[in-house]
Image 1 (cartoon, rainbow over the protein chains, first blue to last red):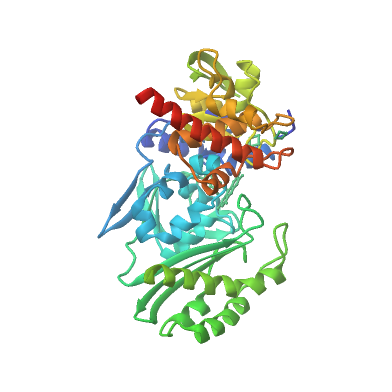
Image 2 (cartoon, each protein chain N blue to C red):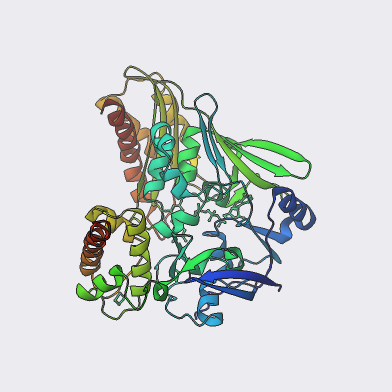
Length: 291
Length: 164
Ligand SMILES: Cc1cc2nc3c(=O)[nH]c(=O)nc-3n(C[C@H](O)[C@H](O)[C@H](O)COP(=O)(O)OP(=O)(O)OC[C@H]3O[C@@H](n4cnc5c(N)ncnc54)[C@H](O)[C@@H]3O)c2cc1C
Ligand code: FES
Ligand code: FES
């Protein structure tokens, strides 16, 4: 076989959350958590190395998806992208998440990759991350002492770096119920479907008729982490959504981002298309409501 | 590096094994169980040559730790035939001449079976979307899509016969 073999590590396979937390408390950053493994096993084949790996494959009871019309959505740490796609509630209330799942990787990867793993990989290109960022939410981290919630706005602290402490396991993602009269959508651009995005965007707008009263706009692949476009959001708040306002919005979007050249696209191209992508995401959300 | 005791059910047969902690399911299938039908293409989840069914779901065995598959039901291409009869999907790949060099085919066949077991009557668009993640360097995919369509029809009429 090729050189793409896994580094040497001792594998821990806890079956309960307390067992996993005890291991994390004992071994701290000596251990790498492997959930779906679709990011971290690839990294380990390219030399990423810790003495221990901890597979969550046998952790019982964390692959749930629960929707409550008052509380919103609770996504267990082991819930896969396929599970999101199969949920009628996700499709109805959180179309941004559903749309991020449709063309996510491949069926094989969707069957193993988790949404929580996507957030914790902290990749600027994460599709699930982008969708959740626009919707807002909180990630629950547990350690032996208890649990805490981290707002998605505070989760990513730098490229591939999160606010997670070494002894913590993420157990659940909580996404609020979308405001009444709100619309949300996700769009991404790739060379072929299986590719990671060269640009992705998610919007979540609260509407009063045709006037936007509140907005969250998230974009990926244009900075070290997924970002919120705060100036664009400010411009949207109070604005009527029409051809003209969408046009002026496009200029703000591209002025607000500072992308780089990489193997999937160039900074210049990303600047060019970013505004159009936001416009199309808003139109997609709006058209879905009127349809 | 530690070793773990696992029980794998592969193509209907149980195996009690010791596996090294960093071994993928693909390596264990090929090197420890001598089941070389599942192929290695990229090792990083992109080509689909290593596709197997775990508890009925398509998965990349190159990105699955063998120890994490303990107790699960695994099916590979060689396990698809029953009583010496090829699976209708395998038969359709032959009849539609969907095979050239053959390297991608075990993965393609397993992937297609994974689709038809969930969605017995997929549209062409659904077939194409589902086959993303399985790369073929030879055929240009047209015949492969035809084979999946034809298998779907055959399986439906076999079902009718069995019921009727
Ligand atoms: C071929 C291929 C195509 C892909 N295409 C896409 C795509 O289209 N869009 C996209 O966004 N991504 C894509 N990815 C990336 C990857 O599949 C996703 O990021 C996936 O969501 C990661 O989830 P996972 O469960 O596999 O995470 P893992 O790889 O298991 O973990 C990712 C990171 O999170 C940590 N972690 C995971 N769960 C926990 C937890 N509960 N507590 C603490 N830490 C945890 C791990 O330690 C690791 O650092 C692709 C990957 C491959 C190989
Ligand atoms: S070898 Fe597993 S996807 Fe290529
Ligand atoms: S037949 Fe040769 S790779 Fe598909």
